[in-house]
Length: 256
Image (cartoon, rainbow, N blue to C red):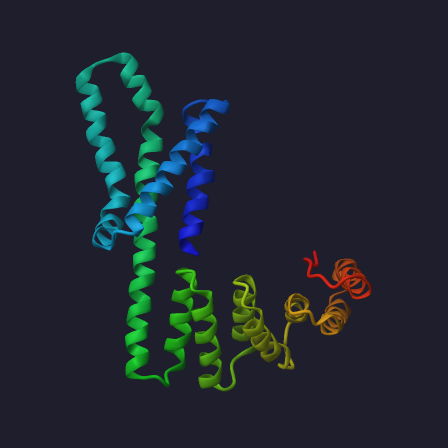
């Protein structure tokens, strides 16, 4: 997951920077996209060379500043006015690219290291619920949604009774990760609490809809709209979509 976030930032953020600092036209945007693709390509290479990943993660974030300062000095010594102008325009882009590469690799390495440490701790003490929860979080950062879902469910079974807030947060996390069966278990746990927030029922309606339980989704939407009058219009729109699907060819569709 974190790798894809980094790639999205590189692909979207770099054109913004080149547009602001290099050229405020299509050429500037195109250059930014090209640089972003190069950054992603370099990151992909580093990702597959484990020997260098930690080194790149540690020094990458500071190399941008250090190398930029050295290059500043070199450009100054050359004394070419045109070259100096070009360097000043691209200076921020260079720092940004190097720092972004370093930060992304460092974040992923930390998540991998945490996952290994939690796995070792679970092997030593398999009954520790908190460690399962922490490893699930680390696995989510690494994009292992299936492993995270299994850890969250094990956390639930080991914990027994968990708070409504924890159950709701976990259900929301699993829903976003596409792990709908596991998300439903946590949503059920959150909804069973007498002090459950109305938003839990709206979340469970979404999950049930994804699982094809239209009647259950409609029931949750009625509870949600009854407890939250300001959301009646949104709930009515979602209910209309569900009813239409029930009468027509079954197909899953976003509620809103």
